[in-house]
Length: 260
Ligand SMILES: CC(C)(COP(=O)(O)OP(=O)(O)OC[C@H]1O[C@@H](n2cnc3c(N)ncnc32)[C@H](O)[C@@H]1OP(=O)(O)O)[C@@H](O)C(=O)NCCC(=O)NCCSC(=O)CCC(=O)c1ccccc1C(=O)O
Image (cartoon, rainbow, N blue to C red):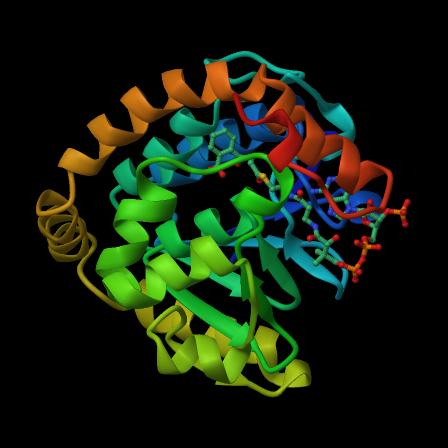
């Protein structure tokens, strides 16, 4: 498959999947998600690959979530809410090898969900983490909320979603949202170092460990699936559309006037 929205590379038994849409800060549309699923699955089941690195091209953004310019009631692809995002989330969870988020800039909205779902996160000191859902008429039911609470704790997860604040790399490290923070110019060396260490480990032991870690939160997949049906209905409300419109018009949303 040739890719338009991502860059896929393999080096030293490590696969690199980079969202390549810097003009929208690496936000994803339907096509992007399709390509990420394909690349994640290919790398995930290739016996020569020991680890997968998920990132974005350029310095500004890892990923800023759904592309708001491809969103009018639904996104522009397939799936319950116009993006096969559940399949991508499942692919990250299900591939039997570690997925490392390389976060060099903004990890916002659905981009933050992707980083949260990765097995480990290596951040540059320029990384910025946060949620924007309730500011733009969206929410990630399942992994982005319930699983996030497993990662950072209930209080912090609720703060992240309700308050929609931004967190720098050190704050993310303190709450367990990333594993390590390194100077920006050392990010790639650090990612390579972690990747090379994984190449030396027993693939089967790692696969069993990953499945074992996954087991205790597997019920969240069902919450996400159910929630996605609700989200699809929510996306078609004036309240949600106000969030998308306000973002694109670069103004504050006025949700209250649309609440029924
Ligand atoms: C990242 C920001 C905080 C950066 O802010 P700032 O530095 O002030 O720059 P801006 O001027 O805002 O942005 C520069 C430029 O980039 C464009 N842009 C940024 N993000 C997006 C985007 N997501 N979509 C489209 N375009 C984007 C922006 O418009 C500017 O363009 P110009 O042409 O230069 O004007 C800030 O930009 C920000 O907060 N961005 C995030 C916006 C956002 O709303 N993200 C989507 C959140 S909702 C979501 O991700 C749901 C999608 C999804 O994954 C999902 C779907 C269904 C169920 C579950 C999920 C799930 O979340 O898992």
